[in-house]
Image (cartoon, rainbow, N blue to C red; front, side, top):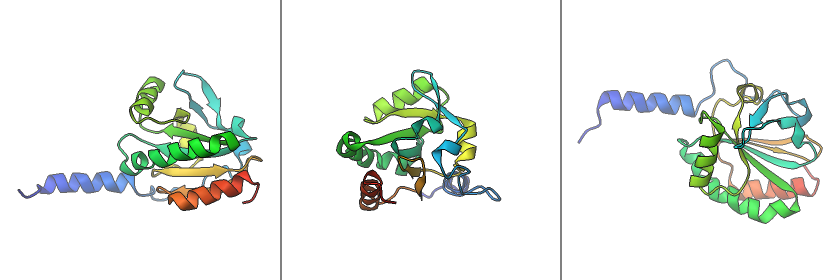
Length: 171
């Protein structure tokens, strides 16, 4: 059975939106230090938290959506990293971009067995961090400095090396 042209055009449009940067928009986040971040996210319990409150933590900030295959494929890696590095000071925070309520984010996190904290990304934070495609991951040092900005799912070995260096205070 041959795919219909309309289906192929719709599929191409979805990929174009999901995996490309919006034309004319900067792909660089406005905040090169977490203290500069003015945006916020909502926890599954409905509390609003500014991203800047994570200064003092080695933070792996991950943007994801339930329809994003690469995002879902990296959950086992992030779970393993959480298990390995949480006691050493790594905080993983996964912010969902497609759910409409914090309760829906909690449900998706439970469904995908995410072991690390999740939240719902606020629109201002999405704009500030220049989230135009996902997955998008940022690694912040304890002093709040943005160390790494990964567009797409980073390789597990590279991410582990970068996290190790960040926890040891090396860029």
